[in-house]
Image 1: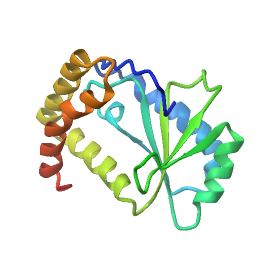
Image 2: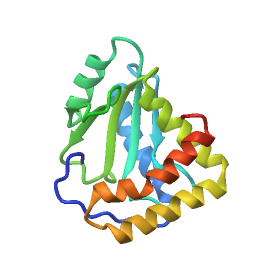
Image 3: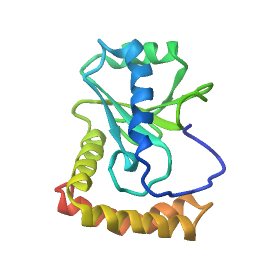
Length: 173
Protein backbone atom coordinates (compact mmCIF):
# COMPACT_ATOMS: atom_id res chain seq x y z
CA UNK A 1 0.00 0.00 0.00
CA UNK A 2 2.00 2.83 -1.40
CA UNK A 3 2.24 6.16 0.33
CA UNK A 4 2.13 4.99 3.93
CA UNK A 5 2.91 7.96 6.17
CA UNK A 6 4.29 6.12 9.19
CA UNK A 7 7.12 3.74 8.47
CA UNK A 8 7.88 0.62 10.41
CA UNK A 9 10.80 -0.94 8.58
CA UNK A 10 11.11 -4.64 9.29
CA UNK A 11 13.46 -6.88 7.33
CA UNK A 12 12.97 -10.61 7.82
CA UNK A 13 14.77 -13.73 6.65
CA UNK A 14 13.69 -15.15 3.28
CA UNK A 15 10.36 -16.95 3.34
CA UNK A 16 9.68 -19.54 0.64
CA UNK A 17 5.94 -18.71 0.89
CA UNK A 18 6.64 -15.42 -0.91
CA UNK A 19 6.62 -17.29 -4.24
CA UNK A 20 3.11 -18.62 -3.54
CA UNK A 21 1.96 -15.21 -2.33
CA UNK A 22 3.19 -13.65 -5.58
CA UNK A 23 1.36 -16.34 -7.55
CA UNK A 24 -1.92 -15.54 -5.73
CA UNK A 25 -1.59 -11.87 -6.63
CA UNK A 26 -0.57 -12.73 -10.18
CA UNK A 27 -3.61 -14.98 -10.58
CA UNK A 28 -5.94 -12.19 -9.48
CA UNK A 29 -4.22 -9.72 -11.84
CA UNK A 30 -4.38 -12.14 -14.76
CA UNK A 31 -8.10 -12.62 -14.19
CA UNK A 32 -8.56 -9.21 -15.85
CA UNK A 33 -5.21 -8.53 -17.55
CA UNK A 34 -4.38 -11.81 -19.31
CA UNK A 35 -4.68 -10.46 -22.86
CA UNK A 36 -3.46 -6.92 -22.13
CA UNK A 37 0.05 -7.39 -20.71
CA UNK A 38 3.34 -8.89 -21.86
CA UNK A 39 4.24 -10.29 -18.44
CA UNK A 40 3.86 -9.91 -14.71
CA UNK A 41 7.24 -9.84 -13.00
CA UNK A 42 7.95 -10.65 -9.35
CA UNK A 43 10.72 -8.17 -8.59
CA UNK A 44 12.28 -6.76 -5.45
CA UNK A 45 13.90 -8.67 -2.64
CA UNK A 46 11.06 -11.15 -2.07
CA UNK A 47 11.73 -12.47 -5.58
CA UNK A 48 15.28 -13.60 -4.75
CA UNK A 49 15.53 -16.97 -3.00
CA UNK A 50 17.54 -16.62 0.20
CA UNK A 51 17.43 -12.80 0.37
CA UNK A 52 16.22 -11.10 3.54
CA UNK A 53 13.49 -8.59 2.75
CA UNK A 54 10.70 -6.40 3.95
CA UNK A 55 7.72 -8.78 3.64
CA UNK A 56 6.10 -6.84 0.80
CA UNK A 57 5.81 -8.30 -2.70
CA UNK A 58 6.97 -5.96 -5.50
CA UNK A 59 5.31 -6.52 -8.86
CA UNK A 60 5.95 -4.98 -12.27
CA UNK A 61 3.18 -5.42 -14.82
CA UNK A 62 4.85 -5.10 -18.23
CA UNK A 63 2.93 -3.46 -21.07
CA UNK A 64 3.53 -2.69 -24.72
CA UNK A 65 2.82 0.59 -26.49
CA UNK A 66 -0.59 2.19 -25.96
CA UNK A 67 -1.77 -0.43 -23.45
CA UNK A 68 -1.44 1.59 -20.24
CA UNK A 69 -4.95 3.09 -20.31
CA UNK A 70 -6.50 -0.34 -20.97
CA UNK A 71 -4.52 -1.89 -18.11
CA UNK A 72 -5.37 1.02 -15.80
CA UNK A 73 -9.10 0.53 -16.46
CA UNK A 74 -8.89 -3.22 -15.91
CA UNK A 75 -6.92 -2.82 -12.68
CA UNK A 76 -9.56 -0.37 -11.46
CA UNK A 77 -12.20 -3.09 -11.90
CA UNK A 78 -10.43 -5.29 -9.32
CA UNK A 79 -9.75 -2.49 -6.83
CA UNK A 80 -6.48 -0.86 -7.86
CA UNK A 81 -6.19 2.89 -8.28
CA UNK A 82 -3.53 4.70 -10.29
CA UNK A 83 -1.28 6.72 -7.95
CA UNK A 84 1.02 8.28 -10.56
CA UNK A 85 4.72 7.69 -11.06
CA UNK A 86 5.65 8.79 -7.50
CA UNK A 87 8.65 10.62 -8.93
CA UNK A 88 10.07 7.66 -10.87
CA UNK A 89 9.68 8.03 -14.63
CA UNK A 90 8.60 4.89 -16.47
CA UNK A 91 6.94 3.25 -13.49
CA UNK A 92 3.29 3.91 -12.73
CA UNK A 93 2.25 2.94 -9.20
CA UNK A 94 -1.12 1.59 -8.10
CA UNK A 95 -2.62 1.60 -4.62
CA UNK A 96 -5.38 -0.66 -3.35
CA UNK A 97 -7.87 -1.26 -0.56
CA UNK A 98 -9.72 -4.37 0.54
CA UNK A 99 -7.07 -6.90 -0.45
CA UNK A 100 -6.75 -8.62 2.94
CA UNK A 101 -6.79 -11.98 1.13
CA UNK A 102 -3.46 -11.05 -0.51
CA UNK A 103 -0.07 -10.36 1.01
CA UNK A 104 0.89 -6.69 1.14
CA UNK A 105 2.33 -5.67 -2.20
CA UNK A 106 3.48 -2.80 -4.35
CA UNK A 107 2.07 -2.83 -7.85
CA UNK A 108 3.66 -0.97 -10.75
CA UNK A 109 2.91 -0.86 -14.45
CA UNK A 110 5.95 -0.38 -16.67
CA UNK A 111 6.41 -0.10 -20.41
CA UNK A 112 8.52 -2.98 -21.75
CA UNK A 113 11.38 -0.57 -22.58
CA UNK A 114 11.26 1.38 -19.30
CA UNK A 115 14.57 1.96 -17.60
CA UNK A 116 13.03 1.19 -14.21
CA UNK A 117 11.83 -2.23 -15.38
CA UNK A 118 15.31 -3.02 -16.69
CA UNK A 119 16.79 -1.94 -13.36
CA UNK A 120 14.39 -4.14 -11.39
CA UNK A 121 14.87 -7.27 -13.50
CA UNK A 122 18.63 -6.91 -13.98
CA UNK A 123 19.23 -6.42 -10.25
CA UNK A 124 16.90 -9.32 -9.39
CA UNK A 125 18.54 -11.66 -11.90
CA UNK A 126 22.05 -10.74 -10.77
CA UNK A 127 21.24 -11.41 -7.12
CA UNK A 128 19.62 -14.73 -8.05
CA UNK A 129 22.90 -15.82 -9.65
CA UNK A 130 25.39 -14.37 -7.12
CA UNK A 131 24.84 -15.72 -3.62
CA UNK A 132 27.68 -13.71 -2.09
CA UNK A 133 26.24 -10.42 -3.36
CA UNK A 134 22.74 -11.49 -2.33
CA UNK A 135 23.97 -12.18 1.20
CA UNK A 136 25.91 -8.90 1.38
CA UNK A 137 22.82 -6.99 0.29
CA UNK A 138 20.62 -8.90 2.75
CA UNK A 139 23.00 -8.13 5.59
CA UNK A 140 23.06 -4.37 4.95
CA UNK A 141 19.26 -4.38 4.77
CA UNK A 142 19.01 -6.09 8.17
CA UNK A 143 21.55 -3.68 9.68
CA UNK A 144 19.82 -0.58 8.31
CA UNK A 145 16.37 -1.78 9.40
CA UNK A 146 17.67 -2.24 12.95
CA UNK A 147 19.45 1.11 12.91
CA UNK A 148 16.61 3.10 11.28
CA UNK A 149 13.35 1.24 12.00
CA UNK A 150 11.21 4.37 11.50
CA UNK A 151 13.34 6.39 9.08
CA UNK A 152 12.92 5.28 5.48
CA UNK A 153 15.25 7.95 4.12
CA UNK A 154 18.22 6.86 6.24
CA UNK A 155 17.36 3.19 5.72
CA UNK A 156 17.60 3.74 1.95
CA UNK A 157 20.70 5.92 2.25
CA UNK A 158 22.42 3.27 4.37
CA UNK A 159 21.90 0.63 1.64
CA UNK A 160 22.90 2.89 -1.22
CA UNK A 161 26.64 2.15 -1.44
CA UNK A 162 26.04 -1.61 -1.57
CA UNK A 163 23.29 -1.22 -4.18
CA UNK A 164 25.45 1.04 -6.34
CA UNK A 165 28.34 -1.41 -6.13
CA UNK A 166 26.06 -4.24 -7.27
CA UNK A 167 24.67 -2.01 -10.04
CA UNK A 168 28.23 -1.56 -11.34
CA UNK A 169 28.83 -5.32 -11.26
CA UNK A 170 25.66 -6.11 -13.18
CA UNK A 171 26.11 -3.35 -15.75
CA UNK A 172 23.49 -0.87 -14.58
CA UNK A 173 26.08 1.87 -13.96
